[in-house]
Image 1 (cartoon, helix red, strand yellow):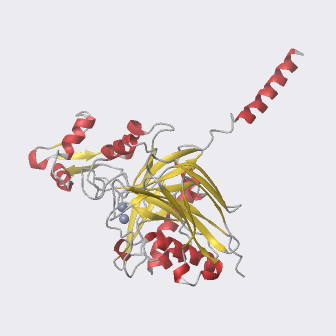
Image 2 (image 1 turned 30 degrees about the vertical axis):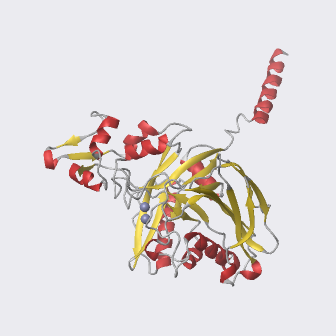
Image 3 (image 1 turned 45 degrees about the vertical axis):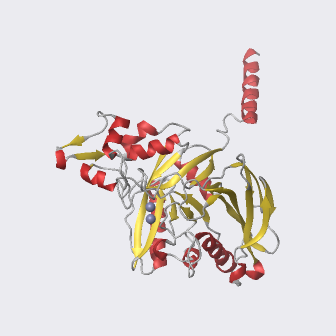
Length: 413
Ligand SMILES: [Zn+2]
Ligand SMILES: [Zn+2]
């Protein structure tokens, strides 16, 4: 009898544990991250430790060091003179700052005078210094830096196990696709989730909204990139990047039977001693089961993230199945917010004036909207009346972008 009582208690305990959530893992949490960062491993101007220290200090949970066609692996020595030349502004030497922060036992130098060299630490060497469960994680990445007939095709890949070499295709779209297929092939071969996103489409006027639409393997693109050279606003002949998002999603939903793109905000930071290409301008907030690369990628694929250049949300309920969106902005003192619900109506998809029109507008911090019968999709864009503290283009305000909700396309026969 005593034995039976013990079994009952155990059974009750197991049931209770499930009810209160033990054994189910943690409740999903929000994690802040930057998916696009350059260091001395390619054309950035600081050591990866210095860059990671900045992001960790600023409250980021994950960071993807995404250098051009290189992973932070292997033995790489750089001339100290070249390191110092990368600094665009006067001030303390890059090496001196590195030495002051990490000390002589960590910093590896060889040679003297003009021939002096410094070794770049690998990501594996950095991890024990920075990675902390639930607090900070490096996700290994690369900016696959490709081109087609001089037009840039840059794709970031995160959670890589191996480098991806850029392969040219027979057309621009095939070149875009080749990076995605390479990421997919590696994902299957190595059994890890790899997320790829198309970067700064207007950089070098490389990629049009139509290209973005037709490469349907592309699930993510940068709706905001903090590099001032990426032509975020477009020009008289080219739509801005946000408009491109609407054009591409409208084509996908009205004509291709494909799901829309999700928009990522990133820094594409290169300069860490002043200069134009600063860190801290754009990021994503991902709601994931844990701070692991697989969980982050999985949440992003479900659209469980938003992009920001300065606005945070307190609550976000985005339900693609029900077609509803409800959220609350974390208001800051003295700041006013406008949310524009942007989308395209079914009967207007061929009218360029009405592709990505404002379907509704809200002021204040609480917003709720649901997909209407005649809408292909909608997305929410929040703008503060306060200027971005580190603007990458003239007149930039703090913003946030919420992923689209769409009507499931009718099956094409
Ligand atoms: Zn790039
Ligand atoms: Zn870049």
